[in-house]
Length: 313
Image (cartoon, rainbow, N blue to C red; front, side, top):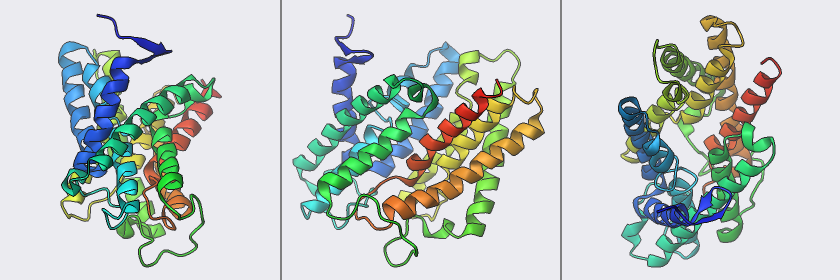
């Protein structure tokens, strides 16, 4: 049976699934939900290798089940709401599975923002030119966080933090410039190596090769589960995704020169690393809800990569 199309590519089945995805993301906690995004990407890549179907990646990993714009954003918004109601100490807490609060209204907020995330992504994708050049998932995560801040917090949506002290930190062990630079370069080289090798495997399914940048992204996302469990892990998915995307996008432009593509990818990785710190100082540090620094730079860096590459293609 064909799904009931509401408009464009938006259909009723996915809309209902997005509500469930947002609710589940709130129930298990936004960060754990994002970790499952990474796990299901790996599962989806395995399925795609065997069956040539991207169903798991499209519907589960980046769709209404564990798409960050739905499950992670739903969990973040539900945490913001829970803090406003006094159920949770801070709206920045994305580690606590919110089902533990025993408050069904919190889960329903997650469901509502799951639907909102699905619709925002669809609208962004339809914007001429921008929709083709931007990471609509990341931009939706950012916009969802801004909306939740405006709805559930009295702290400013945006206010620059000149210094980071007290509870203003996002990931305190990776905010000093030297640490950001080293981590960005190292994570970029790792991600680029994985992605460039994948796109050059002889006889590989072209559709699977197109997913090359999300493989290192998945590995970074899984690290978030370990962060929830208490290990001071690096947060690098914004770096690994965009550095790998930059390298594989520019690889044919530079005539297949892997070294040049590597350098270009590392540059974009550095932009991602320092860009996330900029976003955290502007949107995160002075607020009491979560506005995601990685999402805030992923959409912009993706736009920068694709637009700049179009001038040379």
